[in-house]
Length: 365
Image (tube, rainbow, N blue to C red; front, side, top):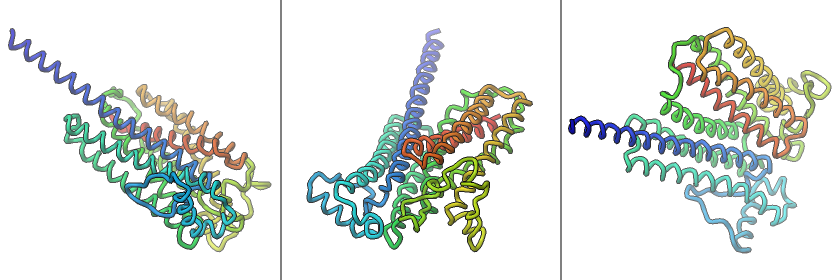
């Protein structure tokens, strides 16, 4: 009897230790998701305040902020040699420079802070044996994505420090998409590590798998064109006007459903990828296609027997796409104010996370 009791106590102890380790692992991943979201918000503010080119060099380990007048003057002199200052901000004062420098410095600082927190958290979990070997490949992937995101960020900024006084909208889209990928990968590992918490009863939810996949691909394309809308520069308007700040009417583009400038370039690629009205046109109508597609998914889901978590995912998609659509229209009509711009990007991340959840939960059984 004493042997059996000791064995039961050992099992109970091991079970409690497993629950504790699992909880710590979840906290680490959730913290990572929150920090990536904060990075995306600060990145959005950095872009909308035109602060991204204020720091003209890059160090992987970072640098201390300027505290003296001499340090500020030195940084401002470096910025004055950049194409953005020479061509656009040539009348900028030192005090105005401090404002844009703050947002770019904060963006880089939080990025490095996130790296340290991820690393310290991993080392703690590893040395306290709260990570299983099966989880290591995913964690290695997270660190690889994080390092790649930092390198892509500088690669993007570098494009605006050479000849053109603005970053490439293609590089901006890659930078944004890599941030979403890092968030999505972290979130997916979190879901995977908690998969026992979700329903496993037989259901018909897998019949929606292909439709969810198609909608998720459309969402990714919409995120890319969202970056184009925010990042493509219209040179003839002084370099700070973007596709989201023209044709600010809804549902028509000015006086027409399809503005005459959408297809007035030499070929279809330039019209839709390197032309402000064309970029906005694609972003507008992808939003409509996505809203209709999610509505169709909701109608089809009502014909099937779904688990409560699958139903939750579809419901979140419906609410998410509705709110995001409204935010998109308001952001456009009010010429992309800072608050609405941040909320619109937040809505995009919420939809992205919901899409991953739906894809996960409809492929689980």
